[in-house]
Length: 457
Image 1 (spheres, rainbow, N blue to C red):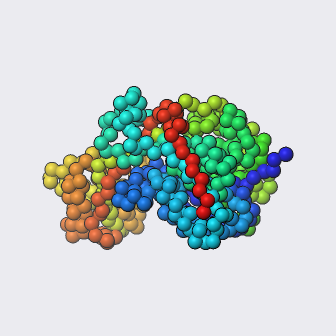
Image 2: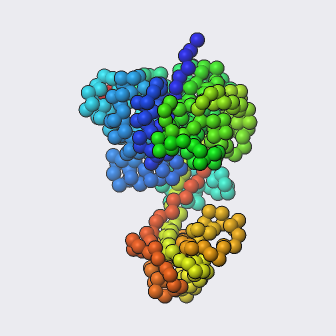
Image 3: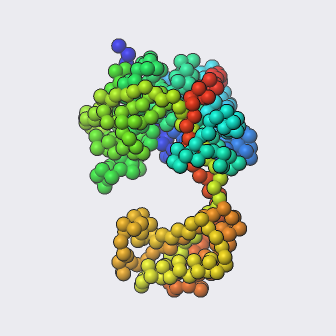
């Protein structure tokens, strides 16, 4: 009988708690460490970095992290799976290999590199061959924005990761892998699940969905009894104890902060969930309506009963493109009548922008301390609010117009309502808007192009 494996989550996004993966490796037994760095906008950021410097384009935090934990991983037999490669997995892997050699780990570390998800250079050819890459939200063809596209990556599944693990990679670096595959690929590798073993694959997807956001399923960002969740300053990240029959336990290392309960895990399960019966991944369609959860002891939740169905014939593509410019300015108004002062400042500013003939796609105003979180649901503000922050933003295709807006915030200090404060740091910064374009593509256009390389340090 195949023994259970422990797949630990070490990062939920690029910028997550830097100590978490170190603690996962050193605070108790694990078999695999998964690190999730990528979000839709992250790929465009990395693409810009690579355009400026061909050696960049990956999660740079990953390299010093691996330099720190690789000796421990090699000693303890822990294998790492990460999508830190971004748009340049090969360069990321080369850095990790260099650090492994410098740490005296020659012959002890094998790095697997997975490429083929990046289709930026193929977009025009794909469109010409009948793949419109239509926007899933509004149906427009990608041709409408093709000249402004910054990144385009197909979501790949577990199979290339499994192949790299089968070839004895101790570190696997991917580009735009699905977040869930970073967890269930080690399960497929360890338990030898077949490609059409839909129920077991679906269970792995659920495990990956629970694992992918780090401490969000161990008490972080949780509404469930949040004042009583202990020691979030030392929060433990989740660990999936998976068995070959598709059941698994969600837990964390003993002695760490946070909490694992049925309610907190359930809260994570509904995160970013659409149709619960149709959680689509490249490998399987999981039915989240079949999930059974039960508390199995302190900080232990058992998950079982998950069912799934055949994979689809298409893969999702994440595309980012330039969509104009934006800037955000803020001023703080104090008591008395703080909101009234903020509203008057907003009126004055809008009138001045109109008089200047400036055109924007949108001007948005929020009053932090009153309605920035709940919008119209906030109702009318109480008259005795001690202070409120006016936050006003503009966006549009003309950078010059947005630049002009940034010059109109500071004058309100002496030409608007009284009791203003909180203006420091100079004019607001003009930022490029990167928009998201979700699309689908026939999987046969991607799968034959996937490449797996395994190199020994």
